[in-house]
Amino acid sequence: MTAAPTQRRLAAILSADVAGYSRLMCVDEAGTLKALKAMLRDIVAPQVKAHRGRIVKTMGDGALVEFGSVVDAVSCAVAIQRALAEQNAALPEDRQTHLRIGVNLGDIIIERGDIFGDGVNLAARLQEVAPEGGVALSASAHDHAAGKVDVTFWDGGERALKNIAAPMRIWFWAPDGDVREKTIRQDAPPVLPDKPSIAILPFDNMSGDPDQEFFADGVVEAITAELSRIRSFFVIARNSAFAYKGRAVNVRDIGRELGVAYVLEGSVQRSGNRVRITVQLIETAGGAHLWAEKYDGSLDDIFDLQDTITEQIAGALQPSIRLAEVDRARRKPPHDMGAYDYTMRAISHVWMLEKDEATKALQLLDQALAADPDYPLALALAGWCWAQRSVYNWFDNIDEARANALSLAEKAASLSSDDPLVLAVLGTVHTFARNYGAARVLLERAIQLDPNAAWALSRLGWLETYADRPDAAKEFFGRAMRLSPLDPMNFNNLVGLASAHQVAGEDEAAAQMFLRALEERPNAHWIHRNLCAALLGAGKKEAALASRDTMMRVYPNMSVARFKNAMVFSPAVLDRIGKQMEELGVPPE
Image 1 (cartoon, one colour):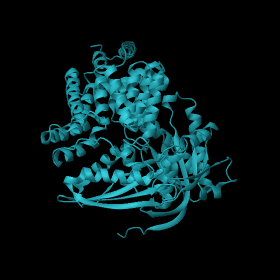
Image 2 (cartoon, one colour; image 1 turned 60 degrees about the vertical axis):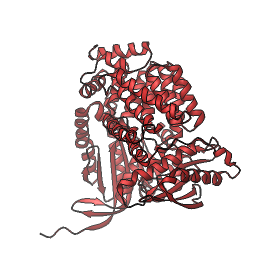
Image 3 (tube, one colour; image 1 turned 90 degrees about the vertical axis):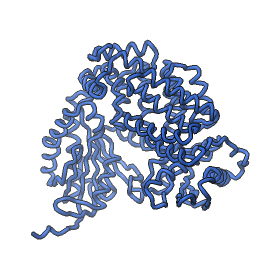
Image 4 (cartoon, helix red, strand yellow; image 1 turned 180 degrees about the vertical axis):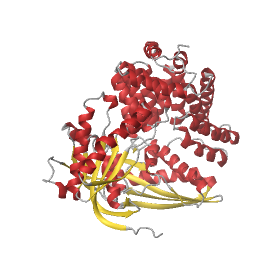
């Protein structure tokens, strides 16, 4: 049997996706799936048929549709959104479904009924930036639809889209006039700080050995940490910069997204005991290469190489800076590369705040400490992993987990008393031990040493939350997210903001923020301990019960007493949340 030939043609493509799909699935999986099927059957499919379109495929939380006419595609998108808005008006807020729709006119490839090509890819990227309940159009689609559809579109200007080489002009429509202002405000890039700002991008691993990927990451980690100690620099935290790992992104877009004037790119090639590090500093506004350098040496010299690179960057960014300002305390290097390697391997697991990830990190850190029992970074990270076990109810004996965390962190601090990360870990552990005074001193000292310590700022936000100072907490969480805007750990800052609202008695705002955090990290099931109570306080009992069910499925031994023992909120806040949990049927003991 001969396969159908591949065809190419110009077509209008509509890409639709459910906004907040992960959040909806976490709250009510069965109900969400039922609602989505009904929406596709009762709203999307009839409108597509009425506007002479073809549903190419559905993807659980979205659909891809082909039209022969742009006017039909845009009219269909508007009709779908209007019908869905009418349906949502009769539903409670937590049961509403909202779509984002992108429409593009472009070339497509048709093969076995499916469609591919740049035209499809751009439609998908437009859908990602469309407002909830609204439509985003490419310039080509707008040119054909303007004046022929009974709605008015506003000009969103040129915008950088993921995996699209050049900025694209986008036009928007939404039934709610307020959405326009909200969309533009959310997409506004960060303002450049009033001092030299830089992001150190992930270095390429040129060794030909996938297992050496962690080594390249470790070099970037060390350079980022050293640069962060220079108080006259604004340095984007390592986790945000690593969001670009494996992506081909224009440096101008990176500068816009992160709010930095410079980026450092590089590569690491390791062969046996030899290493070559190549770096280049680029100015983001014009893409100009300011300087490039190549460094060769042995692994025995790796820390000296990192220091040399740091000094060169300081000179290129601000020539008037004296080298004395680059004088900083280096993290104590391990006695052999084995400990360093294991610790670098562990770092990617440490910050996930998930039980299995923390277990993997501890296994690697145990190997690092077997090679060098006095390596401060490994001790500190191991302490943080044990602290996670205590506060997230991952260990039966919470007091034992807390004691292990404190012991490891204190030993790290005794060996490296001027390392901001070590001090931040020790401050965090003291927070969990309810030693708030000591915790504050340690965290503030960490920020004095490293003004760009996003995680230390975040932990100060948590400390203020536990001390019933929610307004101060919100400020710290906001500063942490500005320093590291693409940090995978930002979901925990969202949890912190939600907890600050909860402490303030603002359960509606708390519940929404907890749900946003879950949308970013669906496997962070420990959030449901607070979410179920906040939903109940917000008057959403059905959603609260669904959240409680998720919590009890993951934590079958959960009780109000275990929750109170793990958490370190004030007694008054713990009592209020505990009563809400009991009202939802969580066992008291």
